[in-house]
Every structure is written in C-alpha cells, then in structure tokens.
Amino acid sequence: MKKVLLFALGLLANSGFINAQELALVRDNDKFGYIDTSGSMVISPQFEKAGDFKEGYAAAFQDKKWGFIDSSGKWVIQPIYERVKEFNSGYALVLNDDDQWNYIAPSGTVLSTPVQDKFYDFDNGVAFYRVGEKIGLIGTNGKVVLEPSYDVIKPFVNGYARVRNGDQWGMISKAGSVYIPVEYSELSDYSSKAIWAAKGESFGIVAKGNFTVVENTDKIWDFTEDSNLTYARRDKQIGFINTKGEWVIQPTFDKARAFNNGLAPVAKGKKWGYINEKGEEVVPFNYRDAETFSSDGLAPVKESKLWGFIDTKGKMVIPAQYEITAGGLSLFSKDNLKGFRNGVARVKYKKLWGFINKSGDPIGGKWYQNAENFSK
Image (tube, rainbow, N blue to C red; front, top):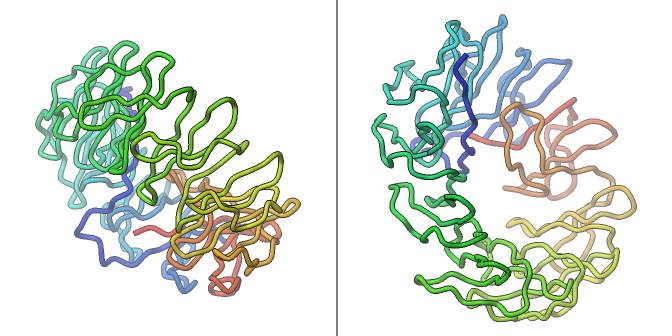
C-alpha cells in the first residue's frame, strides 16, 4: 500500500470561507454531531466518527466509509473512501478501495501530480514532494514548486518553513526560495518579530542576514506575534529578551510562558504568577500552574488539581472547578488552544466536556462525552 504522511495542518482558513460559521464537534450518546457558538445543535449526533471543520467541510464516517459534509450536514463528497485527511488549500487526501491516495477538490475532481509514493497534506498552498531521500514542494496546480533538495522540511508557519540538510538548518519561503541559509545547528519557526538560531553552543537572533549572539544563553524559545519579547535561559534561570537579543527582564525565574495582553506567566519554585513587560509582578505567585492570557483577556490558572480563570488584574472571575487541555479528541485535531478563544473556553467538568462563556456559564446548558474546539 502506498504511504501517506501528514503534512502540518495550517492555521489559516481559505479566504473563501471567512464568513462561514464556526462549529464544534461534540460526542453525545456515542455519536458525533456539531454545535454552534451559542451551544445550539446544528448537526445532530449521527456519525460514528467525524473530524473538525476545515475550509467549510468536515470528514464524517458512515457505513464503514469516509466522506465530507458541509456546515448544514449535507454530504458534499459521499462516504466512499477508506481513509481521508482534512481539507487544506482547497484539497483533501483520500484513500480509495484500491489503496491509492489522491488529492481531491470539494467537487471530487482529482488533482494530477508527479507524486508516486508518499503523499503529504497541502498546507499554505504547498505540499511536500519526496523523491528518494530528498523533499521538495508541489503547488495546488499539481506542478513542482521546488525540486526535492532537502533532507527535512518542517511545517510552514506564516509562509516560511525550516529546512535541514545534514545537521544544518535554514529556512525557505513557500515559493521555495532561501530565506535563511542552511548554516545553523538549531533554528526557530518563523515569526515576523524575530527568529532565533544557534551555531554550535552559541544562541542568538538572526536578522537581515546577520547572527547576533546572546551571550551565555543556552536556550531561546520562539517569538510569538503577540509581543516583542520572548523567554530565554541563562545559568538555569529564565528571563526575557527583545528582538535584538537584549535582556529586558533578567533571568530570575524557573519557568515561563509567552507574553500576551502585556502579561506573561512565570514561576518561582513551584508557584506561578504573572509579570508585565517591565518585569514587574502583576499577579502574585499563588498558583500551581498558569497559562498564557488569551485575546479575550482571561487566563487559565490552577489551584490544587483544577483550573479557573483570572482577568488581567488577577481577579478570579471563574472558579477553579475545571480540567483543561490543549489537545483535542478529534482524529484530526492539532494545536488546539487552552483557555478562551472568541468568548468561549473548552473545559471538562465532572468527567464531561463542553464550553463555558466568560461568565462561567456552559453554552447551551449542556455537557458532552467529548467536545472539540470551534473551527470552520
């Protein structure tokens, strides 16, 4: 049987589906269906297995075969396939009865490509293309974008991907052009803020073709799009550097996570609190664990064994009575978020899953066997 390898799932939906409503996969009485952000059941639980919506379509399993439904629950691709991957960049991978993988459009049209053996999902408009031990790229027109020339290509992030030849890393654009030469022993994912790298035991920042060493640093975490600061480690302690590699907050913490909404969770010993971008304590170190603030202005914090939510002033606005996880229960879930997103948070309450609003009320007033994050 020909092989299929999962190419990283993109986070950006196709522009044609921007106005589609978000739906969440839920499991009730051992069947899967979908709710909207108000908690109303939009597609009644009827499937044995199902996936999250992506680009307006979700994989669903019926009569021992996979197909795809739209947001009304209507079959747009009949369940005739042995296995499927989710839609990305206008195509999904499907496996037919002849053990043949193909890229198909929502119309069912098969994309012709030069791929002979290992198939990878499309992501950001390109898919990996392997010949022998080398990997290149093909586009959504089925044509080669980049001849196989790297040992490894990592998932694209905002149009750029890390690549490796031998023990050295660099970065390319989705057009296949070199963005950072393959000359680093370690390299972060792309961020418009800054990219860190390592040469031997030296860690630093890559900018405009130059590598600036951050002295005595043995680890740097990726920059996010939410702050000009990221955390780094020196002498077994963690602090924060800026996009120039300058220490803005000296390394005095045992653990840390990213800044968002101007605050970052940090730990001293076994207790977590929050600091601002000046390094000032804003939320006292009272918690067993703490996660990054969401854009909704709330952050999950752990008291004893359960999680609640605080606001940016440190006030507990939703009591600690939930379990949370970044993982998902769908066969296709990747990189699901902890905490609030667009006004709701996925939580577990007394062995059941569901969503709460910013007042702590369960949306739709119901809990489920399983629940996924919203997608469209």
